[in-house]
Amino acid sequence: MKKGVVAIVGRANVGKSTIFNRIVGKRVSIVEDTPGVTRDRIYGDASWLTREFRIIDTGGIELENASFTEQIKMQAEIAIEEADIILFVVNGREGITKEDTFVARLLQKSRKPVVLAVNKIDDQIYKDNIYDFYSLGIGDPIAVSGSHGIGIGDVLDEIIHQLPAVEETQEDDVIRFSIIGRPNVGKSSLTNAILGEERVIVSDIEGTTRDAIDTAFEKDGQKYCVVDTAGMRKKGKVYENIEKYSVLRALSAIEKSNVVLMVIDGHQGIVEQDKHVAGYAHEAGKAVILVVNKWDLIEKDSKTMKKMENQIREQLKYLDYAPIVFVSAKDHKRVHLLLPLIQEVYANSQKRVATSVLNDVLIDAQTMNPTTTFNGGRLKIYYANQVSVCPPTFVLFTNDPQYLHFSYKRYLENRLRDAFGFEGTPIHILCRKRD
Ligand code: GDP
Ligand code: GDP
Image (cartoon, rainbow, N blue to C red; front, side):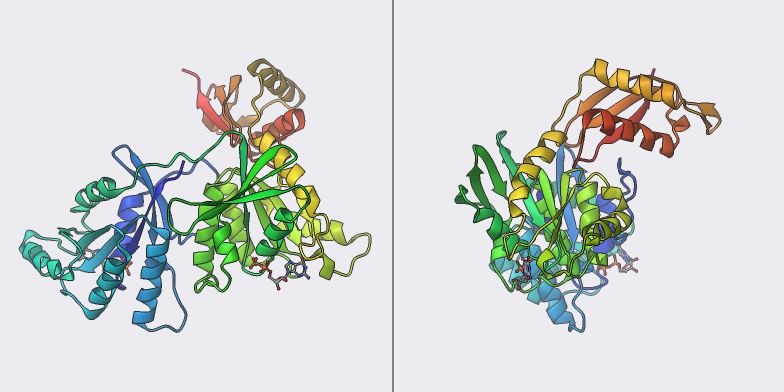
């Protein structure tokens, strides 16, 4: 299911990130914090009434050595490209500036729905300031105070009102996968290599929104779809090299996929940006395959592959479930291994285990390695259930969740992996108190 996307634009210091934080709030993730994922997030998931949407603070995407005007132009263009609705924030204390007018014109041209928030109206006495902003010509200004939390509800009402209907894209018999990674690791080459394989029958599907293009194909009776191939084909995209933007693109591709192929440049090894992208793939709970590309450029002996594998495992500890494949997109070497592996990890992410077998495995695990005292008590697991797939998620009903030490959870995860074979997919274990 595709969520609507809202992007915040506006000059520096008008209060974008204050409003962003108000809207996103502090959400507790069910997944442990992933090392390597940047703390200064520029996107978040939000909900209001019954609707959920994603929100991006474009103020966090920065161009080095750019003038204010270049900076805001870039941010507005990214917002227009990525979002369904734009939340345009201006400063109600300062009145309209020439940058506000400039942004308003770009937004007008884009014909995207715009919600106009006039910020820093902390007090009724400033309320009349908002009328000036009608002259921007992009609709009714809403008075808000980000720092006091005033008017945010009105902004959210308006966002929900304009949010497009939710698209149901998922077809059951299609495996949707994305090929993500830094610029120049070989994503396009790999896509072409996969699509160029024998017996692959290809057709493009124009996305209904923006410039998204997914490529559908069939091989050996299995339907697949490579999501977001447009970005890969359109070479020399203007903002592709801005890290935060490219991570954001990866994120939206990840979300649309069942399986993520995370491409690493085998010649360069893992760099910081790889960790950010990989961290998001992990957090999204999708099946992941690590693809080391450009293997043709490496001088190899019998230990090279093992060495590289150890390096990757060390740097991307949290992706220990992801298989690693060494390929050369350029020479089409080992690329044929990918589709069968995609099928396999997809199946693993969809796997449901019978409750009785699950409970047998957990009883055996506890017999072999009984729980010890932690946080003032000893964990008793009464029974467990698998509550969902993608990723497979298990709930343990216990005497008290706080007695569960993370290393014991890790141990149980490993036992489940040994018993059921979840290669390529994360699994989540939740712990509840039995009432
Ligand atoms: P951004 O650069 O647009 O993301 O702006 P920030 O959210 O970082 O805010 C810039 C400054 O304006 C900070 O000092 C905020 O505390 C302040 N600020 C944000 N919202 C309000 C508001 O509603 N009223 C007042 N008085 N100050 C605000
Ligand atoms: P993208 O930006 O991730 O889509 O990367 P491209 O597919 O455009 O590839 C970037 C550069 O790496 C191009 O010059 C490719 O020819 C080159 N490249 C891609 N795959 C391989 C490979 O397996 N081996 C070698 N030697 N070069 C490759």
